[in-house]
Amino acid sequence: MQLPPQQVAVLEASSADEPRRIADLAAETERPPETVTGAAFELADAGLVDVVEETQEDVELTDEGREYAEDGLPEVRLYEAALELGADDTPVSMGEVIGASGLDGPQVDIALSNYARKGYGDIDGGDLAADSDADPDEDAEAAALESLAAGGSVEDADALDQLERRDLVAVRERTVRSVLLTDAGVTELMAGVEAADEVGQLTPEMLTSGEWRDAAFADYNVEADAGEYQPGKVHVLRQAAERVKEVLIGMGFQEMAGPHVDADFYINDCLFMPQDHPARNHWDRFALSEPEQIDDLPADLVDRVERAHREGVGQDGDGYHSPWDEDFARALALRGHTTSLTARYLSGVAGEDVEPPARYFSVEKAYRNDTLDATHLLEFFQIEGWVMADDLSVRDLMGTFREFYSQFGITDLEFKPTYNPYTEPSFELFGRHPETGELIEIGNSGIFRPEMLEPLGVEADVMAWGLALERLLMLVTGFEDIRDVHGTLCDLEFLRDAEVVY
Ligand code: PHE
Image 1 (cartoon, rainbow, N blue to C red):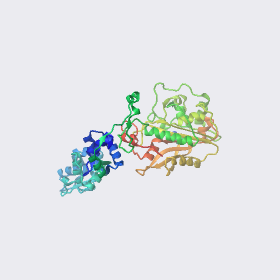
Image 2 (image 1 turned 90 degrees about the horizontal axis):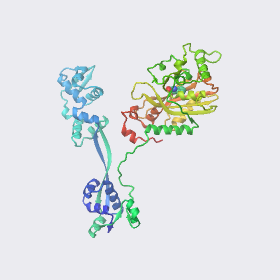
Image 3 (image 1 turned 135 degrees about the vertical axis):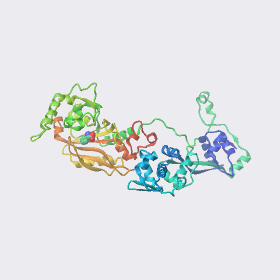
Image 4 (image 1 turned 45 degrees about the horizontal axis):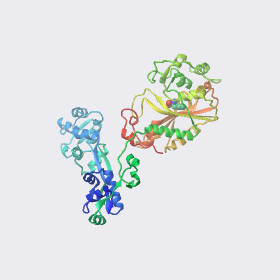
């Protein structure tokens, strides 16, 4: 019988007595594992071999696991320090033991939370006692770590579970395939198999020479294992932004565009933010020094905005009775929210003739001089939006959010009244994190006040919001630290593998 060369090689290297792994066959036939897998499936289709699959778990130490394998588990180090200080005799103050152990940062908490659990002793009223019967040499987790670090395996399933729960090891499942000759395979081998000339890949040379006309081509095997490719791809956050845009366009919104650096006038003054508002001081904003000020502001708009700040609007309106200075309004800064775009569109300076009913949005960057932590960055994507119509109410606002977030599978929204100088009423919006169960703030919203709308020349009602794209993505994908997706600490594996699917 004639078979393609790679199938002949696999058939000849296989045994009828014991299954042989693809990796071993690949080494022996000097062919890539993908080729061997492909050939094995072809042979299996022809009934000449069986392909046996089993799942294997690969256990790998994480960085933290590797660190503890070297320095010892934090609870063991705590116990050893406690023994040094005689805590098996009389309890010693926790601070002293921690100091002597050399543990610091999060390792202290890790040590304390595992200490009693593993029977190293008790912690009571700030004192730490050591149990003299405990023996770190019999610590199953430590032994498992050590064995893994030395390239060995772990039999103790409980210890392995604990290590996995503590994020000290990562367990990955993998399908391992083996090949076993069938009776038919043995018969064919004995009758004699020879390699047929089959072409695995079409080359430019074959095309130019015309050789392809007579060649026999190998079939594709779509079940063969393929190498993993990590090509460039659109960043998850960008994918989410695109999805948000599609959803909002589907809801009848039009997109706004405008400058990242803008005059304070559009970022704050047009929003009826008093010039002495704490968020307008230089600690919170990124001011520009070159140029320092915007060249032109529309004089009539400036007049109306200034009047609203000084006197309020309407018959019994009242202003802020605080200074208002046009120079201050001209100062340039990176926008702290994209509501500056809303101010530009509502006032008409964006060049768009906005008449009710109208709906606008943007998904753009905003910049704040915040302290970095798991939920705050110096820049983030804000989902800005507003609806202009006659007689809008809070129910319209809530209904719009319900509809928008439900497109992302988020249905348990909560609303909390809040204060904004430019909206009344105002609501913060919360959603529940799928992993931690915590309610996290995902946006801020409200109905614009007449003090804002009248100077901008708007007569209808306008409801508006600013939502955080990163927080929305947190709720959708379950990641917990915003620094996983932005900046130098980002989690490359997450960025490679996260799927933005709804
Ligand atoms: N500008 C607000 C923020 O950045 C969001 C917002 C926009 C609130 C419009 C109400 C109306 O948090």
